[in-house]
Amino acid sequence: MTTPTLRSGERRIARRKATPPRIAVSRAVLELKSYFRERDSVIFSFLFPIIMLGLFSVVFGGGEDTFSDAPGGGIDFARYFLPGMLASGIMLVSFQTLAISLAIEREDGTLKRLRGTPMPPVAYFLGKVGMILVVGLSQIALLLAVAALAFGVEPPTEPAKWLTFAWCYVLGTAGGTVLGIAYSSVPRSAKSASAVVVGPLIVLQFISGVFFVFNDLPSWLQNIASVFPLKWLAQGMRSVFLPDRFEQVEVSGSWQHGQTVLILSLWLIVGLVICVRRFRWQRRDDG
Amino acid sequence: MTTTTAIRVRGLRKAYAGVTAVDGLDLDVAHGEVFALLGPNGAGKTTTVEILEGYRRRDVGEVSVLGADPARPDAGWRARIGIVLQSSGGHDELSVGELVHHFAGYYPDARDPDEVIASVGLDEKRGTRARHLSGGQRRRLDVALGILGNPALLFLDEPTTGFDPEARREFWALISSLADGGTTIILTTHYLDEAEHLADRVGVITAGRVVALDTPDRLGGRDQDRAVVRWIDDGRPHTEHTSEPTALIARLAQRLGGEVPGLTVSRPTLEDVYLRLIGEPATPTTSIETLEPAP
Image (cartoon, rainbow over all chains, first blue to last red; front, side, top):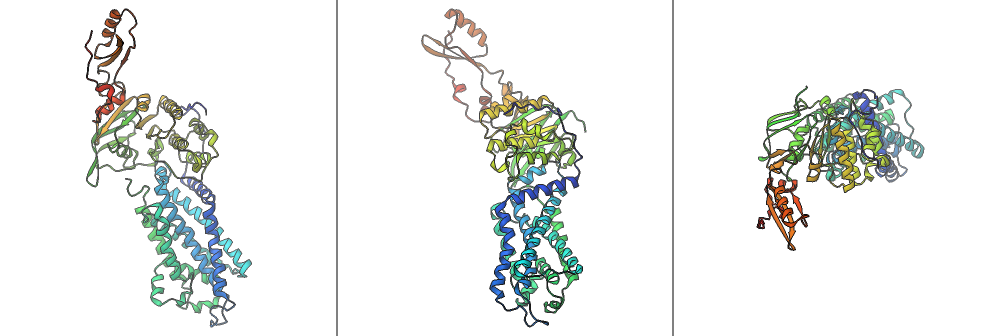
């Protein structure tokens, strides 16, 4: 160990100005490094949707097509199930990852330390968004690749469908991100975070047409699910990945793109407002 | 924003759910000063320091830190202060080098990250993830991140807890070199030798108020206290408390004809004075009131 000597301003590196966009990019890189180094959690969150897709295809597929009474015939269950899995994956990556990781960062003092530096808060949030966008897109790419190779689900070719996919992805991820940040204050401690975050999300997946065909749910459950963003995200993804004729099979008989944009945007705005007003850099019992 | 004092506090009060933590505290810290805040747990040290750092809101009182109100901190102000919190954690999966280089990007006037890593003795741990650092190494990483922005004012909240004696000495040398460079330092500590070694002035807080404030060698009238002279005569130990130790020793030397066997002269330690100030029973060394008759 060297004898410590350090004088104020003795030797400094001429560095580029610390602007919020530069810091945001630097934060995103740091977040991605941290995320991908938690190898166990990465493997499970990347494998989970793939395993679920495989499992449900085997259990419910059984050679018989889903919606065999649909005009023009039914489709393979894997193909029906894929959009729901994509929607669910987006919510898991954005909402679940952030709600849990922020609860931990608040408890272990990461946030408090950052608050004591001149780091602009917006750079912190943008860094999280950047991390979520990269992780989300890589999970979706992997899921689509597995669906195509193992289950023969062809991705759509029309640009219009991919445009729908793009706004669904962006609105869903952005909403999930801000809601995850807002929700991270709900768990009382980092220990309880997983249970408090994952529980409601599983219920939401069951009633939003992810694990079951949405049409099969009783209408009161459909109504409850329609309040939350996941149902709309799943529906938007179905409009991308199912044949056009399946629009008639939807409960409303339409893909309801207008309503989907409206409701996902409303959740995004609600989440943003809560984040800006209620975000805490310290534990409840600390300041 | 130039002011004569780095920190100025008047009548600071803060209560949590009706329980008073800080009760009318006044404090001035000059630019370039190393100031140690001592006090038992629950005396209001951390509350006070965290109000100065901008983490907590005060109920009443005037507070000025580097010429600004810490209750309304902006990025420019945060860039001029460095904070080493009492508890450290987080960023587990990132290496020392990655973290220090990353945090340097937050500051307009950052020190050279590699030089900072070397100065806290973490050169060999540059590639080690925070998760794998020992408690003392982790603390040094905290200090590195605290001094990285080349702060005018540095807060150190119990910085050497968990250090071994050698690491503590090295840390002291680092803090002294920062102080020599003109950094104002606010230190809270439970180690009185640390305060004595580093601080220009010491403030003792109990029950949310400053009860004593002076240089370490004068705190609580320490320099006015009577010296304790011990020696051995006729094979028996003798102890005398006196305000004129030199005269006593001269008399002893004359009577015993030269060297006084077993001679020691001591003043109350900072710890003795501190314990007296916070109302704890003093240690046995100063409670000896059984004076041997003077020859």
